[in-house]
Image (cartoon, rainbow, N blue to C red; front, side):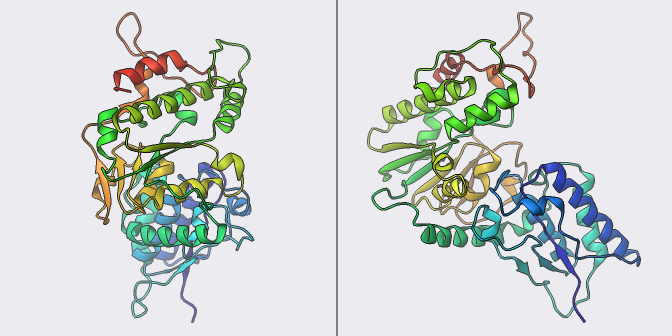
Amino acid sequence: MTRPSLTGCWGAGRPGDQRALELLRCEALRNASSGMPASLVLPPHDACEACCGRGSLIGNTVAYNLVARAVAAAGNLDFVDACPICKSTTHALQLLSRATPAPSAARAPNFTAAAEIACRAYDKYELAHRLPEWLPEAPRLRRELRLGLQAWARGAGFPPLGAPLDDVAVHLRCGDVLKRQHPHYGMLRLDALAALLPRGAASVGIVTLPFSRTCSACAHWMGVSGGRPHACPHGRQFDRLCSCACAEVVAMMVRGLKRVRPDVRITVHDADGAKRKVDGELRSWARLALAPAATVCLPSTFCFWPTMAAVNGHFVASPIFPDAGSLRIPGFHVVSQPPFASYDELRGLRRNGKRKAHPGWTGNCTVSPARMRSWMEILGY
């Protein structure tokens, strides 16, 4: 008799697609626990149809996979990845095992226990990375992700000859968070960031989004039509608003680190995705996960997972991963003091002393390079 399985489809679709799949999983397990007929091998969701295309939401979709595996383990079910086998590797989840056997072949499936976790995760109505249900699967993810990125890098010839990985990798989130000035993202002060760089390190790589892609995406989301343009000193390709602010914050970070650590060579890696649209995000993850001396994740969903797989990873504590401090993984450190300076502080205050309104998805980019410079100077850069 074939054991029941729980599928863990991940996709390149919107988080809402994943939420729908989580609901299907919850209802199927709840029906099974009550003795009602249920198809536990759920059909591939619409989001799966895109999973062999260019990977998107690479940070957000990892936790959905982990929650599904945790549900299967709790119910003593086999886990099977429902996505098709792709001709090329475009997403980090393709590097992980496609099937995980049930914890015990001698025990019967426990649909009630599986439903309890699946439905609790769904009922909280949070993005999966903010839930604690995936925590038991973290050690497996760390092991498989590191081995998978090492194997992918060998096969892809990455890094290229003559351009080895930097001793230290630092990830800086730009993109939409600069526009929205999100309170869950931000930066460490210069002295705190410099303290995380090992003394023996000879090189530091700053990993960030391609400025050109950030520019075009921001312009699309904001519907830029005039507004208040900001002069950008970085050349013709950075002539849009959010890219100007991103370019400025990266330039100031480089100058600040060179000032306090003149012994290290600093390189900005902002073109991994621009040069290689298919696997650019994997290249950035490889830089972070495989850095030989240290990895620093200035909080984001993108860099958290490869930092967890690094030999000496430092994640700056943030509400985006409220349970990060509960992880007990070799080489993984949570930096809670000093706290990061939130991009939310860029909003400034009104005349009455109250914080200005939080920017939405539409409208002009509200962070000018001048405002970014003054904020960075307060942080010591």
